Length: 443
Image (cartoon, rainbow, N blue to C red; front, side, top):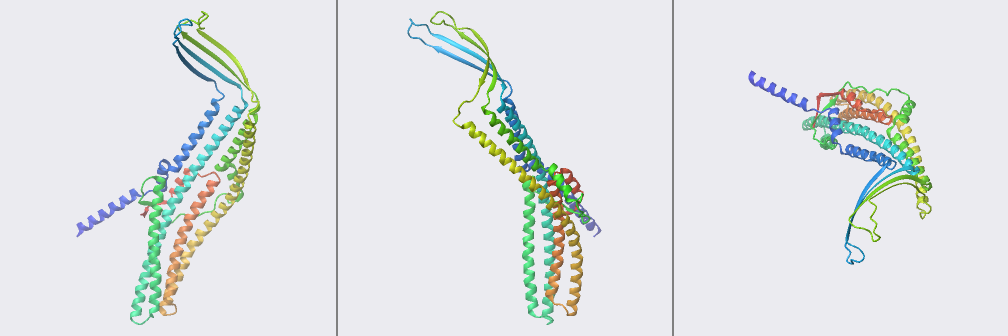
């Protein structure tokens, strides 16, 4: 018997150790999402594609070198006019823009759009932190919901059994049995729905990380919800105006649109370039006048071009660019106002959620005390079974509300940091310290 007990304990220990090893933390899933999230990978590719516009804009201002060769064979049937000939021409051309205002401002626009793209990509990186955190805590939220639903179902099932026994001995009417049965059936359905919601929440993690997860680390009971620091909302508004990545992107897009508008505005200006050409002819015949093709030629030229009439194309492009610059200006104003409002409202939401966590925790104590008093009254006949069922459901609802309040607080705090431009992977690491692998959240 002692040997069997030891084997059982060893097996149980092995299972627990395996569970601990397999439990994924928030940092684990975030690292997987960095490599496998398709949204972030698409954003990275988009950023790299937009970076190429800088090189393309610069290329127009740099020297241009081209080479060409031509081979011509002539078969002359009339011997009186000349013999058959073979001619090969080699040409090398080098050109450099000296004055090209449109190209210069397009290059400036490309640099500003590159900076805007970088801000966009950084915003996508912050958004990944939010998406991973939200998906992770949605699993914990669904697990807590399922646990309380199951506990509620078990409690009401016991109450149903007691009600049936009391009905059998004539202490309760049949209506109490029916009422308890109806409430039990509803809790059973709620428990089934909670089970499905947990599976869906786990599946959502796989969308981000690209792999399946079965055990997560739970949130410690000691986790404390505190007010944001600094407490003053105006300070967070200032942070947002200075650091919000989407606002930065909008501002840079506005500047790029202005540069593009200038580029189209100066399309009417003359453009000056210098070019050098070298060519060589290789021929085995003489021309009709008896002189040979010049074997080599070189030239240097100064070129000036200026549009005179383009059918209204340049004027239309100039107006179009001006309207686009105006739209970018208005979009920036709207983005600035929205950022300020989001900072204020999210700051207030964090404060509210912090207070809600404390209130929800106290509500559990109050609901538990009320249930005990109701059960005592039921035993002496001053309360009925419906009162007891309501008290039980109120207690478990209070537990769900408390769990939800904690997760709501965490996510609202992270969103506030995102709006203020202060969210970083360090916040994942700090939050990970409040997760306990011993609290296994299983699929």
